[in-house]
Length: 579
Image (cartoon, rainbow, N blue to C red; front, top):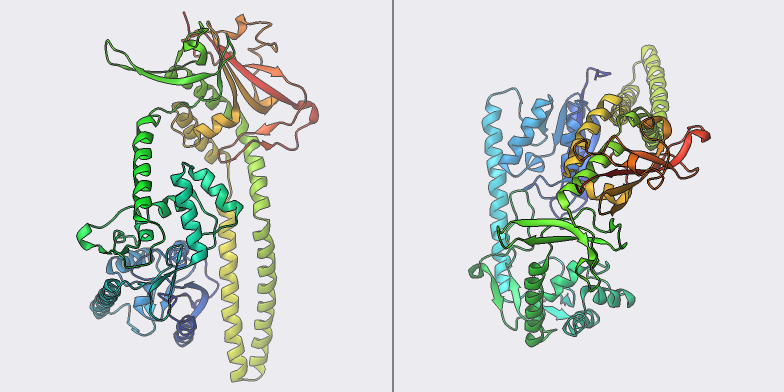
């Protein structure tokens, strides 16, 4: 995108590492960067600030946003107070420098003021980055030493203490918080009395109990409390595995016992050792039995498929044949093994699911819907962009006012030279660049949301293939939304799709408008042609027509169509499976 001025555009990146550092450090970094920009013919158009974020990882929201915005090629320089603000990890520093360089964006440090074109700068930068990483690792080692010393004395080593405990100041000893300890004892008592997680959650929520962070309890938080050995009075430190390369920690992965500091009686006891052990036995038994009875098969049509003979539900069934040890997976009537046995046959899961999914794919991803979807989806995006358009108008108005001020100051300078006017002109020029940059970002966001028929057609084709194979991530959701019922008869299967369509988009010439009961022969086709030529639209009375598009959580109203063209259709297909 063409720049409005020859002056280089710059953005500032600033951060501090922890809550122990002061907010003023950010202001000092930004102030130093702005002074540097002023003295080096740079116009600062944006600022990216990460608060309480370590540079040993790239998991920093504003940093990542800056790297993403660099792809737009709307600024030329990233300004930092020191290189260690950008990264304290050599790999991250090199990786993100390369990304910036690909977009012709330079990284400049105020303190280390290195000439980016000088070959010596390469060596100096490498040395500085090495020292930054050494400093970070050495500091972490020294901090860890201090924490281990405190741990051996059973002192709190930082962070939020477990629910049920508070940190005594200045001793740093853990003491019992009686009101919270009551919650812990309630959870253990209910669990030992046979209550499930849902019952425990209902009790806690009914009494208004909250977690240490002031949030409602969840099954995960209950499970963590039931597994926390600290409640038996055991002081534990260094149990969780170290962070991964991307700075994330797996709370379910633990270090070797030789690395863990464990001191019996190191903290006050809330739960007896006997109760804790009983809880662990119950959890272990539940896990073992749960693994044994967990379904290994997925049945997409569960709750949708019924017997056409007795009206009972069909359910998924998996078994191994004794003769050949092969596994057979099907749907069968619930009453097949009851006292009064239903005579209806089971149906192979693969056959019925493949048929239903292919029919659903043909309907949901009907290419005749694309022009209408493009129109309405574009309208939807325009509504979503209304805020951006309003902001754009305000910025355009501001830009017009700034240009007028610049012209006025320029005219005054022609008549009389003045340092004050020159300073004001510089400020107005910088404001102009910032406004233009903001407008360019808004235009990019608006244009990025444009959808056309070719893009949608390609997406439709890909999604249709995935849905037909049953591998689309939203397959189960689409079945839940659009498949009303699957009825298995002894000689045929009927699938009813609950969908609304504009009749102009649906081929009806091959299928007369009648019900399956009135003309069942016309509803049955051979297994070979998959029965997709025999879709029958049943008039269900007037109703709203709906469009179907990937990404929509539910069918959405299709506005603008003449009322007489709208009707709610129940699409029914049948095919022969038993011969």
